[in-house]
Image (cartoon, rainbow, N blue to C red):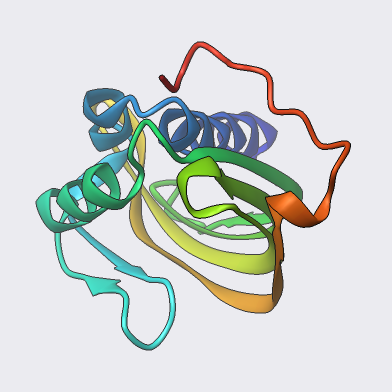
Length: 152
């Protein structure tokens, strides 16, 4: 078991999620191979880093607040030391004040990684949604959203 590679891949995936939540699109691009494929359900499939970043930067506007937590990683590094697979449990919350909605859910991520001269990168990613629910923010009279640094 290559514990160094597992730690490096874990750090890469954590960075991927942090970059999504902080809208750091250039940094997010650095976590992906140029030919990455991504599948987030039947209507959300992407065949390149540029396609994926373009989509995320469009739908993850500054007015949308997101929080993604990863856990339970199961990472297997191939014998060649340059390929790996990973499975992650995702819990996420998305708040869109403009539309009076908060969405919460869970998914299982399935990834493939490749190691190049500049380190590990995600070459395939995607998830299977386990559940998702939404609530109207106005249905929670005591809910008070405090401003954060990543949305205006």
